[in-house]
Amino acid sequence: MQLHNFFRSGTSHRLRIALNVKGLDYEYIAVDLRKNAHQSAAFKALNPQGLVPALLDGDLVLTQSVAIIEWLEERYPTPALLPTDLNDRAHVRALAAIVGCDIHPINNKRILDTLRASFGANDAAINTWCGTWISDGFAALEALLQADKERGIFCFGNAPTVADVYLIPQVESARRFKVDLAPYPAIVAIDRACAQLPAFKDAAPSVQPDAS
Image (cartoon, rainbow, N blue to C red; front, side, top):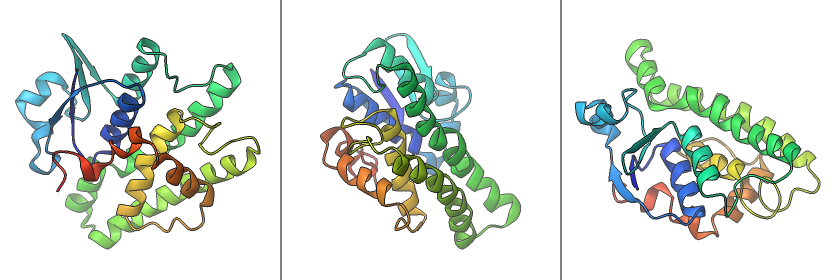
């Protein structure tokens, strides 16, 4: 498999974690968003949307991290990233969706580039924008995590699930945008637990080949 991705992209980060948890080897292909490589003709031949990540498996080209992670779960079911119980699966998917649907999309590069180019936002305004939506989502996540008295050391139980796969890149982003994490002790504790696992450590932006 080939993973076309960018070290600091949250969607790329979550897919690296999922691949690592599944124990899958892949060739790392860097797509430099800082140089707009994702808008090149070569990359758009893979993904016409011009977004990372893209995963190639032989002749199959997969895009959209949500769909790719679901594909991985179905093709490589162990170790599982979703619980076996139907209700528990819905709960874990909901936790992941807070990040994947409600936080990340309005804080990604093309949104921030538009805020800068069309609305004159400076770095302080960008940090405020991102912090607003990260904090809003994290407050809801924290409440749900705190309410689950049988949760374990991760978002659900004592093994990572897709909820953790989505959460940890968003914690990384929160730190980059200078969000105060003190109000979210459960999230901080989960981040600390995940940081002990090679699958998460090896996926971190700072250790990727294109990190700078």
